[in-house]
Image 1 (cartoon, rainbow, N blue to C red):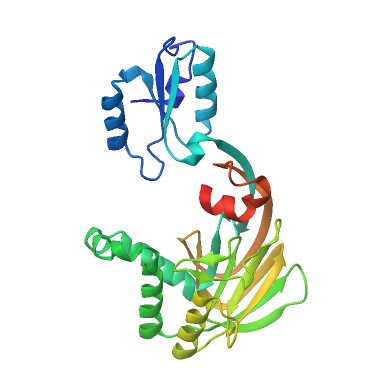
Image 2 (spheres, helix red, strand yellow):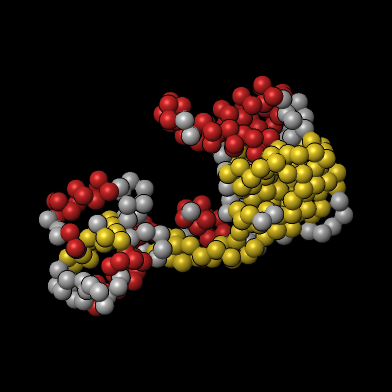
Amino acid sequence: MASAQTIDRTHERRLPVESSVLLANPCARGVGRAAIARIVARLRLEGRAVLEIGRDGSARSLARQAVQCRTRCVLVAGGDGTLHPWVAEIDLLRIGDRRVATVGGFGLAAHIAHQCNELRARALIRRTFAPLGRSIYSLCAAGRIITRGAMPMTYSLRANHGHPQTMVASALLVGLVSKFGGGLKLVPDGSIRPGTFFALVITAKTRSSLLKTLRRLRAGRTDGLRARTFSDLTSLSIRATGLVGAFGDGEWLGMQHRALTEIEPASLRVLVSSAFAPAAAHELGLREAI
């Protein structure tokens, strides 16, 4: 199966005239190469009539080229984004020199994300815990808290270049989406204004209070919540009294004691389904497209 990059060189190879062409996206959920092969066999398509596309926006240009070549039928195997791609601009966060599209943070949350990645890297453990899905975050969190405690650290926070605030916290999360791994509801009303990000500082310091706080976050409850939320942020300077773990988009960023988090509005262009209007791209389009 040829790639879209190769096929799109029309001076080297043109699409067959008055034939059927299949635009196939093996990266789409539920559509793998085995499924595409079955489609090809059932429709009795020639190998050169199957064009593999990816997430680079090539579906639209190849479909246009097929119509210009008087292709009789343009078939699509993929997701809704493949069927009708829509370009949206979304915000990113910059944590130090790294860019983050969803959630990042420091302290206990970083160590939990790191532990989940290590578990998933082991084939046997990955197969054992596969039925848990995203609930593996909750399991890792509970195990880490029970065995290691809350791991509180003193932070100095400076929001939007304002006056520094000192807090003792077990974890600090910054993000552009309202939920974190395991279904934790990080923003009480679920809304984040475009061009801004949020920060959630979990101030629980004991095992029991931290577990209760995480249960309340998962249920979306704010009563008795030992945490503080900062909204409408464009920058947040973070300084810890010691080294703490850091992560972004689930990836380990190492041990740090200070970082500057800033918003980069509309800095990433992605393809999303047309069902998500550009106004919704900040949250819904981001989670569905990446």
